[in-house]
Length: 637
Ligand code: PRX
Image (cartoon, rainbow, N blue to C red; front, side, top):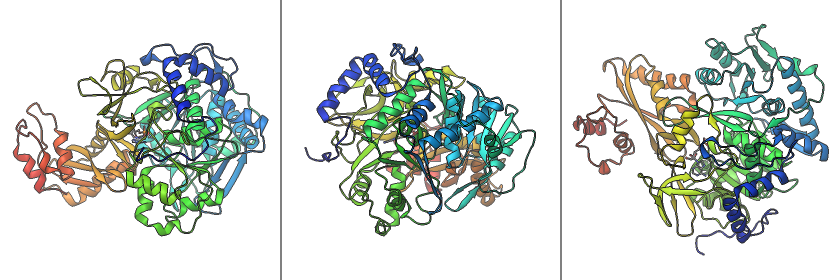
């Protein structure tokens, strides 16, 4: 078939497309059996489950009578079998800063922290906020929570004090684990200071554990702050894993939606781990002694599932990178690949696009000979970018896997399986085991065959979101109410004649800026916090490197109110309320917004204006004031 890249890699877990088709059919026809077998074969249980799925998509449970622990599966079983195998290779911001720890050392480091946390009162079910740089202690913290059955809520180190505060409040966290500072791309990030500010207005936190990393002076509240190194120094080197039910929560991770504040997506212990484990094993064709590197931050779901839980539960060696692709220059990723002989590399299209823009010369200083599999995640990958990745980075000899998934799905749902699925540049190809994608039109009609529509998933999968923390109703509203009996992803997609999926991006008011998910409503409420702002509407514009950038239409309370300063201050306000990742690229001050007579903002029109698609504005006669459209076009930023 034309357009297909035939797989060359030998996947040790699946022979060919026929075996995929056979197993896929089995997985969707009898998911209970299929996943129970996989769960028992692949995970270590204290009590093996006999139950599969409970047949309730909106209140799903998987393996309900099984008992296990994620940390046991990620550490202990390999520390027993292969204690000297490298578990995590840490690569610091500077090339010479690197460290490798074995499974045995991982067990010790996680145990002493878990014992320390236990000593200060952390117990099963407690929520622990982790706001850490990309250092080994971030991994230890997450795994120590898992050992104790405490529920971690990792907050990305780039988020602002206000964003930390709202996440701590929402999950009612009693503990925070942080560091004095983080370092990234040569710059320091004041983590402890941000936590101090966040905690000024919240009462739930009792203890803050602080890793001394850069050694910089920070404020110290001795009734609340505990030094990480002191805490672990007096602890026993082994901590028993708490026995957890498969449906006990494992973590909460906040993500943006089209309305309101970020939602605390809650995942479980058994189903989540199985999803992480199986997708890592099959999709990347993992085999012993291969080095895996996922470039995400542990603050995102990709970091949870594919820096830690997927690789470690397979006994792999996972690389954790503190730096950025552009520091000290655009050859950094490839230098790290050569330095550590990385075999499987997983990154976001936005990073690849930035490296393409930097120029091919940055590829010349590395061989990248160790690479076998190249993965992408987070946004649609343009076919040209896919080709560049395949031809230039992988020298036309690696498999490219474009993996589609979400915070809510826990693990990859649509992706090629390396060495098995023939790929087409730009397509996430076919569903993983147990996943039934469907395309529906705006009225909920199922579209068959070649079609373009809204992407839904029609059957539960083990690592599906269980609830929105503290608000189960919101979960049902968000994912299960748009279309009956279906999980609605919020994405649009096309299915081609070969049944391949091409995910085109969000169809709701969620933006994807450099692979980071940002809700327009969140940015708007941050902007209106500025004292001069009366109203704001935010849309996404196409951006060559970021995928999307943020364009804000802002109505000031008084037009004459010092616009020049206000522009900068609004940007600053967004950084303070959310973080730098949500800063608008452009702000256009406007007299009014295109609204219907009932006052609803017509975002469709704003999107077209911001993207210079003014030829296709469509019907504007329903607007309360159609003249505003011309005014907005003329005043474009
Ligand atoms: O729009 C899709 C896009 O990222 C969204 C999920 O964002 P988040 O929960 O932050 O998780 C990102 C990492 C899993 C999706 O709704 N997305 C993710 N992967 C792809 C993608 N869009 C197209 N192709 C992908 N491979």
